[in-house]
Image 1 (cartoon, helix red, strand yellow):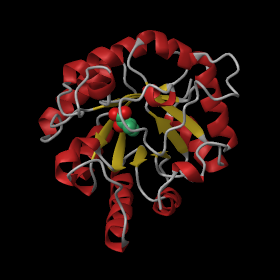
Image 2 (cartoon, helix red, strand yellow):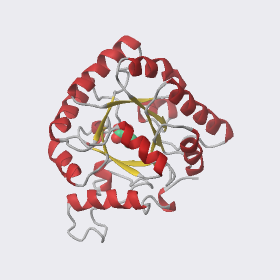
Image 3 (cartoon, helix red, strand yellow):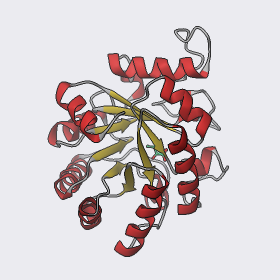
Image 4 (cartoon, rainbow, N blue to C red):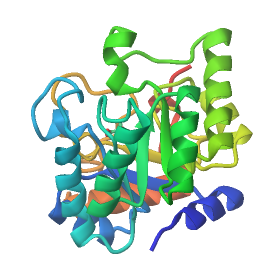
Length: 266
Ligand code: KIV
């Protein structure tokens, strides 16, 4: 069973680890078989499961329902679950909503933002709830960014992101997710913090990698993001099976053959 201690050990040893999003029980069983290290019940379920055009409509009850589906089938992975849009604006609602997800089976609660989350991160850590802070392109802020755009470009934005990462880790964040930031910045953040860092569109130098399950199985609606690789039709997955795709992803991340330069931003 993967725990936060396992991921910290992986970071110390330089062992790259995997994360995939997952929303239902059967896929969780297949990920288990492939020994995927961590599973994220992402609020991306709003787009890939519910058919919305953003993550904003997802509710805490939706997240709790999908988290419980995964928890019933999972044996091996550390389970991360997203607190959805506007469900952690005040400390009392953040605490109540984290409790719902932890009681549904999450091991770690993921929240999006920067140093403004420090009080919440510390409060949850003291209450026995580890957090993963998602920085960079945080999809819940799509309307602030004016679209899904690369973040952390330019000295000022890079310095702010690095400072935010250090601040939330000092406040007690157990993990970070870095989404769509220049690879060089992701490397600097990963080296600067003790917490394991999971990247998506953040280059090869983060401690772990995450992909949306549907994307890595080639099920993409619209434009395929640069950081996605289709592991289902990859010729190394000779059976062209879903389990084979998960196993190939696990192997590729561990051995360092995914992601490559073609999947990263500068
Ligand atoms: O909700 C999600 O799937 C995520 C990943 C893209 C990291 O937050």
